[in-house]
Length: 447
Image (cartoon, rainbow, N blue to C red; front, side):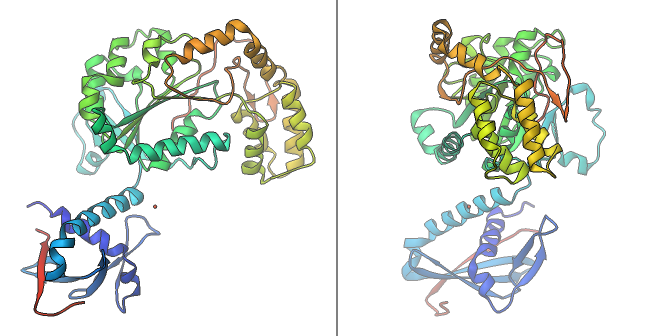
């Protein structure tokens, strides 16, 4: 009573062939999405394909109330191409499924939130302790305010990872990659996670540690995740340093979640991402290579990031006020990308006014932020601290040095706060031969 998955893969593959679009007749169907059109073979229709210099043909037949694809291959070609051809169909079909699939964002819930009484449709959105919603975050690497070279390095790293299954297995390592994104609030860490997920076409699992009751509970959550997913723990530093009394989750439990034996057994084809405001006070055991492969620093805006935001928010590639903005950045002032983009969005109908507002904000609220970072960079003791940190940091993708916490801007109104506690991110990462000598191979779908 099970569907033949090979039948489905062949169907997906045939629908993608250009020969389908070039045929004299084809059926049109609405796909899963409202604007998606799927091409389908008519009963007894023949479609041709080429593989390794051999011509093959597929016939869509219906036998004994079953839809059937019949593959015709010349006897002279069968031994040479049949297996490679079917493997090729598998690969192409999997790639198309990955591109077309609807991404989902999963969040974990407590056990006592599930009373076990829900319908079948709801079951489709549930996976044990996980609940999901469509993941529609629009962030991409093109919209992220980050140096082009750094973005290209991250994209290259991710592209290398998704093609490296056999390489990882040859090394005896689990096929996963882990990233640490650290920097002040509002610098785009959550948006960067969304850009990674959209780039990979991976689902996102957002782990809320405050809803995890114990170390074993965290392991159960890990078991219920799927391959081709990004698993995110945001504000990990706040949890580790806050010593929350609402959960019995221990540091050992977090470390085992990152690279324990369970991780190595059921964590294939996954990307782990952790975000922090600062890693200065974090136990080096958490940051060592193997647990964290790549460190990416998210500083406050520099002039390059400002130009990216001006292009995205205001459509400006250049402006007469740009030199003045650049000079202010050179004097050490800075704002977070979130602050700067909000000022631009609020004044998007007048780019000149938007830039003047940014200049005013940089001269007042942003004064000294960048210069403070510059002084620390020149300090011998601070540099030593940075070097010591890098010993256990794995690969470091960085643009700047960590800067002090900052006050937030709300629209055009600059509110001065006297609170001493640091702010934390709250946003959730949220490519015919008909002769008698032909052999027939039949693929049937069981109904």
